Length: 334
Ligand code: SF4
Image 1 (spheres, helix red, strand yellow):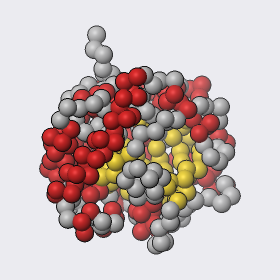
Image 2 (cartoon, rainbow, N blue to C red):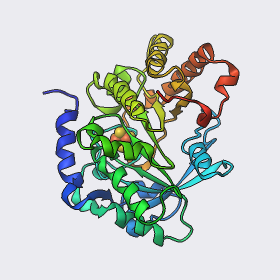
Image 3 (cartoon, rainbow, N blue to C red):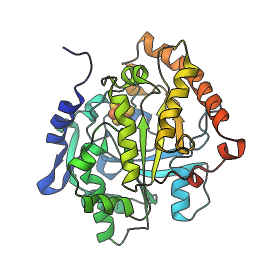
Image 4 (cartoon, rainbow, N blue to C red):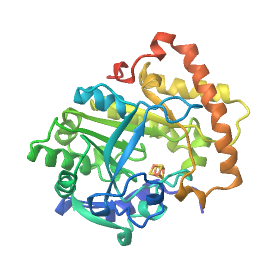
């Protein structure tokens, strides 16, 4: 028996419970009572199925800043970007991978009906509209939202029905693990998503090579390569795409060559893609604590070396002016 997740099978099994297509309902994680809730800085909202997230530009003095989704949201909404951005979060209660560093309880990723509930996109938007002091940014996350790619589409329809299309910034996450975007959406539906006003998507590369990818996700190493194919195909569809990468890995004897290969892969999609890619520092959260082994501790320490290799590689390929461009001014359209 393989020690890796059978991503294709697990995705199909999760989707069985994570969406009811005939009723246009999505399974949403209930956050109150979770381990994740202990890390939240403000109480959960939307009857326990939503939360406010504070995205911070310069969260870590020892790491690259994170402009996502602060700068895309500010540009879309016509504001000057601030250090902190508030966003309304809803979490899909399913994910097909099991990253050891995930800040979500694994039960909230398992399409577990005891800690989740079905909602239409309209019901979620209506709960959001009832909140006081609601942000103008909605983030559909998880979990892996694209186990049910209809969710983004239905949210757009719900926003349009309520006169909110183009009035809020819509952001969604993607772990680049499946092709459900093409399997379950028609070309017309994909075009609606690609052209919806003020919508952008971020996809996360879970490692910089096959070994770090498998170490982080428990998915088979060859799916590392599939991440690049899916990313390129989403760009081809015309989506406004950004990227994250995580650098946790066991110590690597030749990190500079591995990083050069990773950046080559990004540039094979678009020469500017490294400048649209933000390295995420892995931190330990309450749900993570019980999962961490000594190997993970090593990976947490080694990520700084990988981050340095990333900065070094970027400095070889891009001028200082290019590296200092606002991420929203970097073009990656195909
Ligand atoms: S892919 Fe994302 S949601 Fe899924 S386990 Fe990894 S970090 Fe968590």
